[in-house]
Image (cartoon, rainbow, N blue to C red):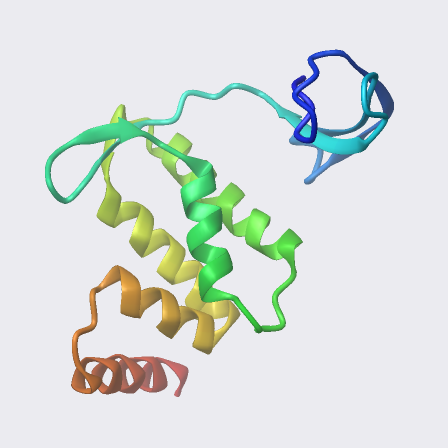
Length: 152
């Protein structure tokens, strides 16, 4: 495993344990060159579909894009990193259960929105505003009205 600090390829595993409901192994590693420690996660290499973007191009599913979007939506909200990772896990689980080789990016966005809707209203609206390209205050108000109607 390449050290994120100095780039060395040699390290030693300091600690290993199951994490995320047994679906991954968390390993603490120590670089043999700079002696800094870092954490890696090992999970089964499941085949995830290609993502069909809005412009028609295809690219491999990238978990980090989902996590980055969730983090941006959850900034300064009472949502911990573990819950964000959990939502990313749920997105992957849905994609795997579908068993398709290609999925539209809109499907991923809708899954994330569904998960955020039940988690945090502010994070939901933030994600929706970027995902749905809100261009005016009226679009925000429409989304807030729909959200409020579903809460009742």
